[in-house]
Image 1 (cartoon, one colour):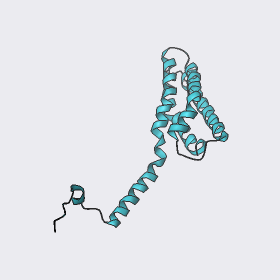
Image 2 (cartoon, helix red, strand yellow; image 1 turned 180 degrees about the horizontal axis):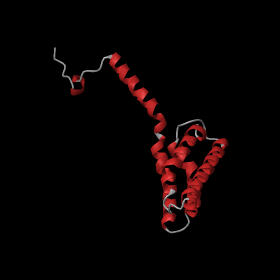
Image 3 (cartoon, helix red, strand yellow; image 1 turned 60 degrees about the horizontal axis):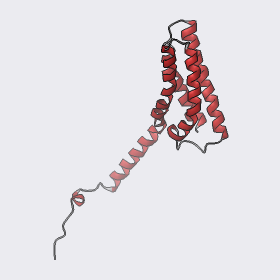
Image 4 (tube, helix red, strand yellow; image 1 turned 180 degrees about the vertical axis):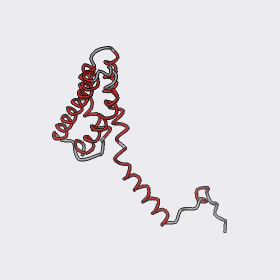
Length: 154
């Protein structure tokens, strides 16, 4: 009888079933532990449009509140569609009218928070035109991400 020729893939030993189960459980636990952070990069990429618009108007020597208003309008125009289809896709339940209302509320909170930074750092403390950009890049996105993740797109 002829000897069977083993293919290279067959030469690689397979893991025992208990080891495979442990690895599978480890990967699943890692996936569950990091699931909450996966939308964050796309959320930040989409949010950069707002910060960029605000920075543009700050450097054009207009009052930063003008940039804040323009950035708010741009973010409202694209934010819901992009976040529901990309950042938070597959997270939470079906998108309803209530989801859109909650998104508008969070967007208004974001606008108010950015307006507060402009008032506090530019108008009240007179730290310069670019001063409000720092909390707009770090504080406001953290607040809006948390609200979007746990309230809007739940």
